[in-house]
Structures are given as C-alpha cells and as structure tokens.
Image 1 (tube, rainbow over the protein chains, first blue to last red):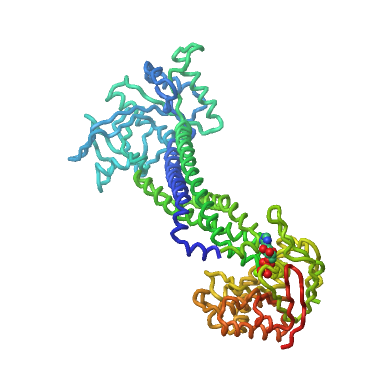
Image 2 (cartoon, rainbow over the protein chains, first blue to last red; image 1 turned 135 degrees about the vertical axis):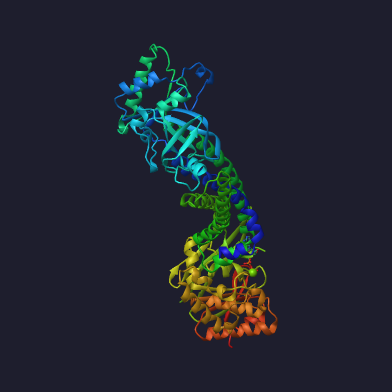
Length: 396
Length: 227
Ligand SMILES: Nc1ncnc2c1ncn2[C@@H]1O[C@H](COP(=O)(O)OP(=O)(O)O)[C@@H](O)[C@H]1O
Ligand SMILES: [Mg+2]
C-alpha cells in the first residue's frame, strides 16, 4: 500500500529522499574509507612489533614545542653497549644505522638504496625472516664480514630471474656477498617496504664511519613487562648521560602504539566532522520527509476516511504512513549506501588500497535512514491516525 | 432485533450555537428489513446514518446494535464494529483510486487480519456476485459509474455484515444504471441481508419495504411499503 502511493509520486519521493541520500552517502563514504585505512594501517603497524621499543634521538609523534628537541645528541655506540649490558628485561637488542647508497650488480645500477647496518637480533626486533638463504649471524657481525641480506624489491631489480645467493654486489665502494633474501612486506602508502639492504653493523661502521647517529631496537618476549623495560631503559640512559633528576629526558623511547594512537586521534576527528555534516543532511532530509508526508496526509484525507469507514483503526493508519516515510527514507539510505561505498572505494583506490563491503556500514546506513524515517514520519502519521472518519469522508 | 435506538439525540456545537440535528429519536429495525430513510436536506438523515454506521456517537440516548450497546465506545472499538458488522455504500462510491477492483474489495479483510490467499479468494467470489469478476484488475477510473458502485457493494458485502448502509447509492448514476443498482440491493435483501438506504428521492424510497420520514431531526412518519 505504501509502495503504491510512492510509485505514483516517483519524482516527488526521489527529491524528498535527496537529503537522506546525501547524508548517508557522506557517512558511508568516510566510513568505508576509514575502515579500509584501518585495516591497512593496523596491518602495517603490526609489522612494527607491538612489544618492540626504539631508542632514538626524536620522538615519532611530536607534541608541543618542536624547538626544544633541536639540541639533542645522537644515540651513541657506547649507549648501545650500556643497554646491552644493563637492560635485563629485553630479550633482543639490535643497533640500527641507516644510509642511502649506490648499489650495482653487473650492468644494473641503482642510486639511493636504503642500507641498514644491524646485528643478527634484527630478525627478532623487526620481525623479518629470510625467504631464501639465511639472515645475518653473530659471526657475520662479530667478524664484520662483507655479506648482505636483500629486500625482495632490491633483489628483483638487481637479479631479475637470476639466483642471487652467493653473488657479489657493490654497495658504495665495497663488494658484498648476498647470503639471503627477505620475505616480501608490501607497500605502506605507496612506499615499498622491500627496497632495502641489510649488512652487519660493524661492517657498516667501518666502511661508512662510526660517528653517525643510530637507533636501538629492544624487544621483550614478556609483553606484560614492556612498561618495566621502558623504565629500565630510561634509567640506564639517564645514568650514562648523567641527567640530573630535575631535567627531562634528552632521548626518546618510541613505540608502535604512539603511531596507533596518533592515527586513532586523526580518524576520530575526521569521524566527528563527518557525522556532523552527515547529521545536518539527515536533519534536512528528515524535515523534507516530514513536510512531504504532511502534504501526503492532506492529499489523502479522503482515502484515510474510506479506510477508517471500512474498519481501519488508529494503529493501521499510523503504521501505513509511518511505513511510507520509512520506505522513502530507506530508498535514500540504500542509494546512499551504494554511492557511499563507491565513493569510499574511489578514495581508497587513489591511495592504492582496496575496500570491502562491510556489514557495519550497511547497518549504519540503514539505521540512520530508518531512524530519520520514523522520527520524521511519526507526526504526520499520528495526525492521519487521529482524523475523524466523517470529516475525512466529506473532504474534497 | 438488529437495531434499537432509544431517545437518541445528536447536538452539534457550532461556536456558541447548538444545532440539534437529531431530537430524541426512537427506532427499532429487525433483521432482513429493507428500510428507506427519507427527508429533505438538513433533516438529519446523514447524522442518523453516521450514528447507525458507528462513524459517530450520539450526544444522548442509546444505540444497541446486535444486543450490544455501542453508544459509548472508543474510536478503535467503533472501527472494529464497522469492519465486522457494517457495509457502506456511498453516493460517491469512495473507492481507492490507485487500487484495482480486487484490492478495493479485499480492503476490509486486511483490517481484520485475513490471510492474503483467503482474501483474494473471497474478494473474487463477491465480485462474481455483483457480476464484475472479469474486471477484478481494473482501477476505478477504468470502470463506469455503475460498475464502480457494484465494486463498492462487493466491498460492503465481503465481511458478511449484519447491516448494509447505502447513502444515496443512486445519486451519482443515470436512471437506468440506478435501476440496476436498486435491483442488486433488492436481490441482496431477498438473500437475507438487512439494508438501510438514505435518499431524498421518492421513487427510490418507494422501492423499499419500510419508509421512515425525517424532518428537523425527528421521525414524522414510519410506515410499511408494499412492493
Ligand atoms: N459536523 C456538523 N457540524 C455542525 N452542524 C452539522 C454538522 N453536520 C450536520 N450538521 C447540521 O445538522 C443538521 C442535519 O444535517 P444532516 O444530518 O447532514 O442532514 P441531511 O443529511 O438530511 O441533509 C443540519 O442542520 C446540518 O447543518
Ligand atoms: Mg446528507
């Protein structure tokens, strides 16, 4: 019955539902986008183990005055050794130094490949594993051997189909033997995570100099002792650096959850903005629906009279008009869900991400549009239900 | 006894003015009667019809329908009685314009919760009774006046009501079609239905078995009519 009435006013119903459509589209677009981002970002962040902390010069997320960090000293080899000696809670500790270098094999040359100098513990702290060959060993590191482990992308570029194991490549001015290739990690916001080379820490320092800054990664297998480990690290470094109790730390202990919470605060702000925009469109849509339903009740006064004369009670009339309002706004809702999904997918594909249809977003779309339908339809429907049958029958 | 009306008065309040549309009416109607309510415009025919049809309630007095006092029921209780006990036939047909004949006829059944399949079946049967089974899928705009009124009669019959109320049923029809409708009503009365018909036309009233004449809200004459 509600359907019949709607079909006979197609254009009017469609225009009425536009507000709902825009509101739901906005909400679903952003919802789909954020869900796609979440999946991706949390997946990538989990590559940085949750229980690995990084001792570095600067914090990852800077709050407040940027300038107070400018005079900080690099983390030194001596400090790394102190951590190895005194940080009893950490199960794995790796020093990490980085530099972009020229890399070549036969006639294939690449500038600016990211080279990491580290130790055998890196496979734990960074959670990487060789796909073929092996990772660095303690002997490689202690003897400062000229060996290297390659990321997947570097391997493909340098060797194409050739087996890389045992081949010698040139990094900077020195030749290194390839001992392993790491498993593929994929992309992070268009940035390849497989375009790097790992060499022994000592080798890196001997060849490229020992004074550059480094970072130290520490991992504990006992996640419940993570905070305790951070306190221990802080104590060790403050002692080594002779920081008086009144002074602040002049180093940073970074952890994945800093990025997670930064990301969460960004997305929740976005959510809030979008819900306000979506909410306003839904409100406007709701007013539109209420208006059109009042018109519809007036136009169909005689119909209401007929229905009442033959036995419709208040509830019958109320639910008829309420249902009609819900159908109008649900049409907007369904179209909004579809458009929003395409909108979200389009945004995600700009970032090379894929999207999925989520039950949550469908429920949200339906939930919002139905609620608006009920709220906007109730007053007109209530009015219709209360009409007197005699007067309605007399209505021209 | 189907209807007993005792000292029934209806007063309309128009601002400060009171209009006494019905003044202390007493009336009984038995099952299977065929009654015409006659009277000039403004005499109170429609007001009486509305109360008998449970579309309205009296200001004073009692109305007993099928041994039940219905003078003081709520809107929803009245709706239920209209659905079960009364079939309306209006001068202007009052069909739903967007619904086809079948749907118009089955409408009363929707409001008493009859299952869809049974509804369809019953609606087709009554349409057959009024000779319109083959027009079941036509909308009112695709039917002639007489056909529309027959759809309305089918709708009035579908719940097998105790009482059929026809308000000027031939008022919008030419005399030949009006004659057909009067014949259908006569056949229904012969088949055992109780019919009350409101009219201001003497020749229509003369087709009924009892004529009640109203003037200024009072019954001035109540006589049997031989046909
Ligand atoms: N809703 C109403 N409000 C006020 N007065 C009314 C109303 N309905 C009818 N009346 C008055 O009651 C009297 C009887 O009207 P009605 O029953 O319609 O007569 P009829 O159907 O015989 O023409 C008339 O004077 C009419 O003006
Ligand atoms: Mg009248």
